[in-house]
Image 1: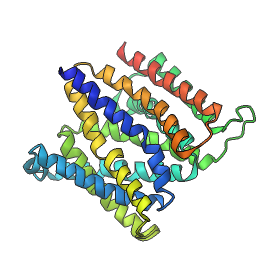
Image 2: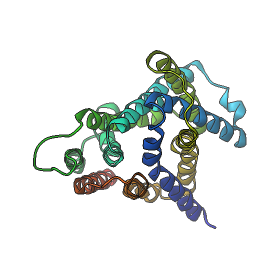
Image 3: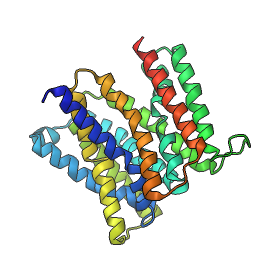
Length: 293
């Protein structure tokens, strides 16, 4: 099997798993609050990232870290996984999964807006069009089937889900500036993220043992949302000779997610969710096409 075929296998596996995360978020939040979910899932993810570092024989490199590296990981870890998932999971606790999930996929559009001031990149016409399309998609999704009444349902949830995409884009930009290996960066980001989550949990929530069904859902979130799926995706990017082809497969994830949301959560999918998601996907496509020129 060629490396490109292996890359597609890894990428499609990651996308399939990410497509189920919205469902596992909603099921988990039936048994624990969003802070507890983040804490338990982060514990599982940290174990996974440590194990992967051991298996890849990077354990020595893992603990050979400079003060600058620790400071950088402390800052990036605050943004992602801590702040990103606090905001995103709170949004999921407010919104139906079919709204929260596609709104979070605004991050490629937000990446364009942030890259201009932070990386000195020029905004192209295509990028501006992509931003406009993305925000129209947000509005359409937020109307929950009442597109012409100009009333946004559950505005706090909509704002949080949209803000999560900004946090993700910002953390992605900062992560690109860090030249350490991805394994090392992920591990230390989760170390600090877990610490921030623990402190927040002590002040604003508490520790509870969920029912068995809740434990299974939480383990699923920790294992697949922030754990092994990152490894699969990074492995795909390492093996392929065309990152753009692999990255374009991401478009499948929000569409597949709606299928799982309908089949497992039994949410009635609003026609506005489909239209808004379509607009967001087009905005991402337009943006990427502009970046290649």
